[in-house]
Image (tube, rainbow, N blue to C red; front, side, top):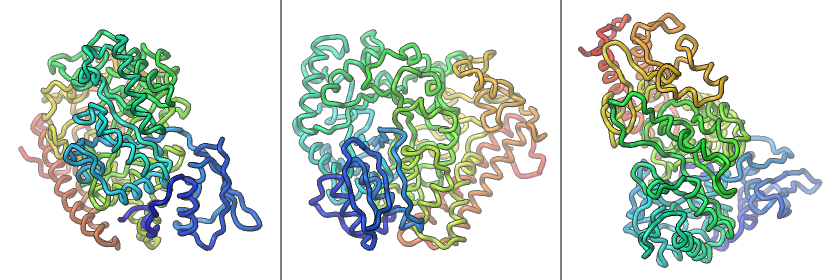
Length: 606
């Protein structure tokens, strides 16, 4: 396994049962020459404190805090840093990975092989690998793992007697690493159990969920809770019965509350049957319109999970206005590790720079939790592309402390994973720091998304989603491109606070990289650097492709160990092919519409 803790070659014993036992084992085997005394402070939870003593070091914290502190000590030493007294606690109490695994073994939007947990309609996993996964998650500070798809399919829909004991056995493997399981549930489940409705206000439905929660927690008493996707993309939900999402979520939350469980309710709700002729309905407005009127109506153990942007994990989106608007509701921000629209773990795409922009926009006190859609799979390296492991690691670190700088996180990961010489570390760090911008240049022009192959979401197709029902339009014609989302257009910008509106409302001052998300502009529009809009589109796509080619050449010079090296170089070749395809297809698309040639004389297909 090539991962950030690949230097911990010592296998984990089956006897580990608690985070304290794991912490002691890891310290004794990874740092045998450094004496560390562990002291348990039950009220400290995940927090920990490291103090120097005459006899060595004292690590003080809650049970999970001791484990996090132990991994922090180990990683400091392995990355060449000096141990220093310190104290820390996570910014967000819940730091969750959402796996979109199905019990048939497939993974929705999975790019790292089949499911780690399921195959053939049943649980099917290697216990040793689950321990290894628990070690990886805990070392990065991740404490909750939701193992099944939010689009819940059989047999997980039924929460059956066969499902629950197997789930309990899996939970026991993660318990020694302080990782709690969560499960996605289907809102309409009562209909499969001789209940005639799933109306959240019906007493029979409420009773069924209460009894179900009792049964689930009897098997897994430390289950984190339930995750629900409702009334979204044809999933069932409260709207079927004329109820609000607060009424639906609260019913489930009350069933979980006696057990200490939380109800995570996804705010991904929009009209997926939109008429492309309709120029007023604007998909990015949907979450705010649905949930802002409900602010303050949710039970205290409900967490509303909001995607970081208003669309669906595009290369660049503004922060969701719901994250800035909600004041009286517990909120989790949802990120996507799985590179659905960002290269599918073929193209290199390091996410920390993007996340820094997001965390800079969202005040820390607005969030109670963070979640990320998993990039994990059954591949030997877990993440398909070895460099995609960086994103999993970085998510955990930023969930603990979102103020960490991307470069520091990336360098730490490189040192722990590969231990390169300084010049090689510098080269890989620079490549990773710039990879998101490179991908953006050869794919998404200035805030436009969705110019991608439908269904597979890999490779260019400028009109692939232009005339469909998903509300994903760029409205390009011979004169202009983009969507006017100001007051004179769809009004989406009005969902934001005044200072945010001021930043984006005028095309002359709107940041370039969001220009076409908020404004519809002619190809002759003059950018602040003097270039026309159409020339900027051409230049970005040529530059992005050139950068992808240079990235591939740089990767060839670095001494990655096998099997990582072969995987990385094979995928670099595929990325270059992908970048050239994007460059040529998107530039040709706009050249055919605009009729404007490239001022630098580069070839554009007529």
